[in-house]
Image (cartoon, rainbow, N blue to C red):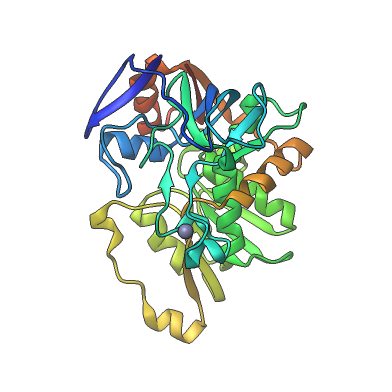
Length: 321
Ligand SMILES: [Zn+2]
């Protein structure tokens, strides 16, 4: 089969590799569409804490079950599926608390094990979520980024009627905005780029305003610094986007947190149940996603696609094998 293989930091190739064989409890999925996100850019160009090389990247993928490994149940060949990208142990403290994304033995597709930037991918049957007939592959592949947003909003403890500010009107910021709106919250998105601002109905600045929840949806130190200054008393800052190692260590004003009883909470990835919720929101139309796709490109054009993500000249890019 054809696949993208990352061999070293910023070194990858599109070429022929063996079709993987599903093991016990696993299935072979024929990939229909993969989503490209900023995490892939970071992972391929700069490396990532969880990346083990060599690796086929791609943590956002949907497709059709092609073949079953031994003792695999209860899955049927031909089922259209979304793949929850994590493989979790099910018995550690995090797993037992419903946060399998923090599993001590977590293995993420595209990071620890091969992902969806290929014609086929092997995944455990328990990671699959079947798609409703009316849900297209191109919509369903948004279940992964939307799941991460659901996790972040859950952790923010956002309540109806509260105010929320989101920094960045890219795909993640836009999904967070739409999700927060379904809760009945007053949402503001802050975006410096005029085109993205207009698309998302965002604003350039929110000087003087305070919010119950602030979420930087852009891996930028300045966005974090700004977000924390806009927290209302008892406000919650969600550390949703990863930062570079250098930018990650900057002190928050702990006296501000102390006097105003504010908190900071991290959000990383998503649990399996978030995938089910995300697909329900997408299938029912509660959160629209199709307008976020700016480009559909073949996987062989990954290098060009990564440049576009890097230069922010796109919204969501879908890749097809
Ligand atoms: Zn676990």
